[in-house]
Length: 116
Image (cartoon, rainbow, N blue to C red):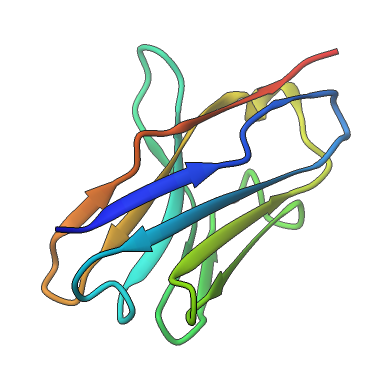
C-alpha cells in the first residue's frame, strides 16, 4: 500500500512564498511520476506540476516561472516551491503519485491560502 503525506500549507500574503512537501512510502514508489494538483470547492482538480522519475518536469501555464517542483529520490519526497504567490493560487493542494503499474495514489491535501 502506498501512502502520501503532505505538509507545508499555510496562510501567506500575496507575493510571498511557501514550500510544500510530500513524502511517499510503500511498494514501488521510487520509480514513479509524482506531482501536485489543486482544487477549490465546486471546481475540478487541476494539475499544477509533475516530475517524472528521471527528473523531467511539467507545469501548468498559470504557475510557470513561479513554482518549481523537485524530488529527493533517496527520501521518496517531492517538493513544490511556490514563489510570487497570488490570491488565485489559493486552494487545497494534493500530492499525486502514478506508480510504475499505472495505479494512482493521492494524499489528503494541504490548504494554501493567499490573502492579505
